[in-house]
Length: 239
Image (spheres, rainbow, N blue to C red):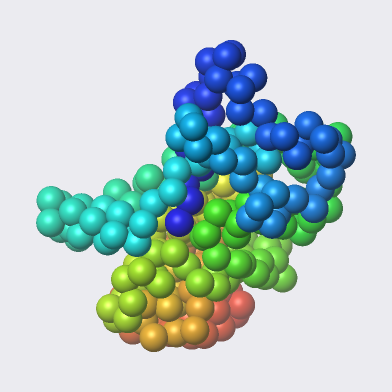
């Protein structure tokens, strides 16, 4: 697994000059750069890994994920899910700003002026390369205040295995933080289906607070992802 670190870590002018991606220098207009060998630049002498978008990266093992989650659970119990969500939310919010900068620089177009699906694929492809899994976005219900995101091969769920409950809270926070920043509107997200529940992939519901609150209530009452989807499509909310 690879985590994109805060760009402030490479703010020193000498370090920035040193870690410019050599392929990016040679092929400045190239967009197809998501092969592992192309996207990352390894400086083994300095112990630094940077990517095509000038982000500094860290490699983390599955043991790190297990240690982080189990450590939080031991310290704060069930509140650990909230902490993981909030970590993801702040990550998504900051990454939205980082993404906006490199997208506009690379494509010479503001993110809201680009085709929405193209823009979203441009955002997620680096995550796929970094080990966070493939995704699929369903925006067919976005006019009704919600949308779905499917994650295949979640780094968290794959690591924890079948534990019988949703575990990808950091992903839910990531989506909520990113999309809230992009549309300049407060959005929430919940995982309604997880690989760690024996499913083949993870499914997230992103939307306004009233819809996420309703989905959370239904999920706690035993509703499946399909049940929740049908209820939202029929306009059901909590009374």
